Amino acid sequence: MKIILAGFNLDYETIKEARAASPAAEQFTPETVSAAYARISRNPAPVNELRAAARKEVEKARRSNQAIVFDMGHSSIAEHAVFNIDVLGVSRLLVEEIEKFRL
Image 1: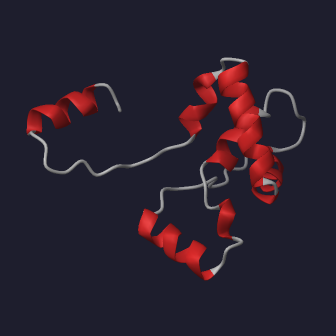
Image 2: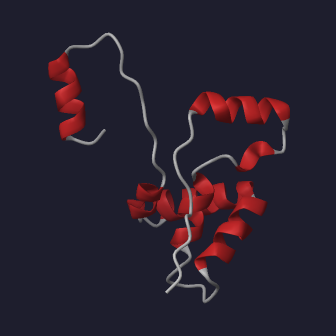
């Protein structure tokens, strides 16, 4: 068995700084992960190679995700993209509701 860390959350400010320093940092997006995992069932390549291919062609990954989610209706690939958000200036009750529905 082989286990590879596929990714982890990064603070968005860190991502913005990296993009500002290097415009080629377009690959700092969760879209490449969801695009790669969408191909697991139809592509015999190992998933780490699928992720590498998606990182090399971010625009292609975006188009693929859009087609899979909106044209084919397979929204489950979006679950591979994780976003953390800060919700400020709201009641604890609203925070509980947001958490309840995993928004």
